[in-house]
Image 1 (tube, rainbow, N blue to C red):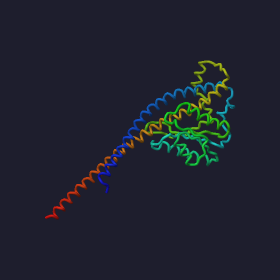
Image 2 (cartoon, rainbow, N blue to C red):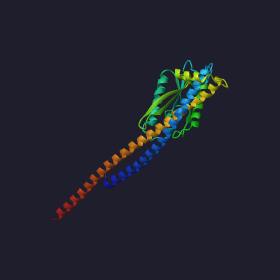
Image 3 (cartoon, rainbow, N blue to C red):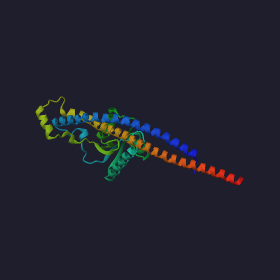
Image 4 (cartoon, rainbow, N blue to C red):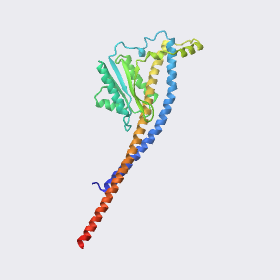
Length: 296
């Protein structure tokens, strides 16, 4: 049976751990609020970008030659881009992304496709390296607070592999932020860019009719060719922000649960320590009584 001193040392250790988990919870909560603000600010920009591409696309005579819109007749190779965190201590945040990514890999390989990897985040890179997957690139060190420049670098690498014909599809796998308690794993095909973004509903067509005709300089096809890479960067940036907010929410929840469990463990250890102390006192009393009986 453990001594009273052993229980005291364990209680002190758990209390120190609880201080760390509480601090991490507060830091994650503050970062989560900032991440939510960034996502809310990003959404109008993304919607406006889609409307702009849609308007230019309607004016363009032909978009078949634009490389980012080209649908390959046969998909032989797919690039999977899992977005994970640079750190752990966030529950199942990283594991559920890599688990879905490997599930996508198995499905594509069953269809006879070749799978290639582009890692984003230290945890994803280490997992893929441990599983002996060959990487076409790795981008780490910015997942806590991703910037637009980070999305540009990732988009440039993915677009280069697609345009050069090394891959026929590019798929993002990341956590979409729902709430601090809920993050949904999302699988999104970002290349080739869907031609649906060039389509509009009847209300938007009516609005364009009221505005009148536009004169484009340069030609709409050339403008669209410049806008599509920006649209790709916007999609990746939005996914990075969603993943960043999801990480902070997952870490806040995980650290809150850890602090709660630490408190329950302290209560249990305190009860056991009191029992051990009572047992020691009882033993000492028995020894005193036995000694007194021996003297009489």
